[in-house]
Length: 125
Image (tube, rainbow, N blue to C red; front, side, top):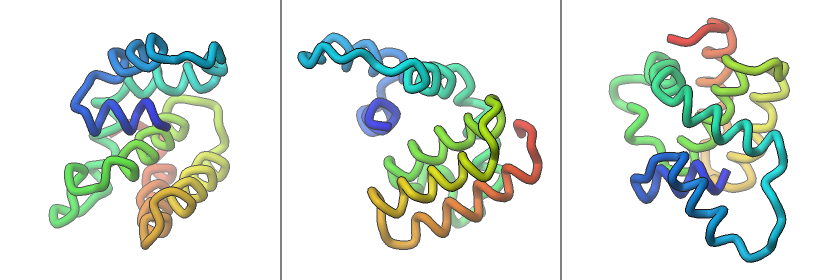
């Protein structure tokens, strides 16, 4: 999540942020396979992901108004919903848990509603 968050916050391309963080990593711990797949997948499908999110957001609360963290969580979840075999209930539950733990406020409820609406359509916008 930190790669997606940092890329958005700093205005970097996701792939560039991934490379930057790998270069700066001193732990020697490689990214787990699914984490790498998720980050690369979100980078590759970001236009479709953002279109799906935007389609389910109101004009008063567009994608650009979401916090960087909520947007990163939402993008990862939408990627899982639309482009992987992850069960929708699992993808939504993980996103809601992350939002509840990391973002607080009404973010978890908000994301639950948006992601559930996207899951019902089951296709990119």
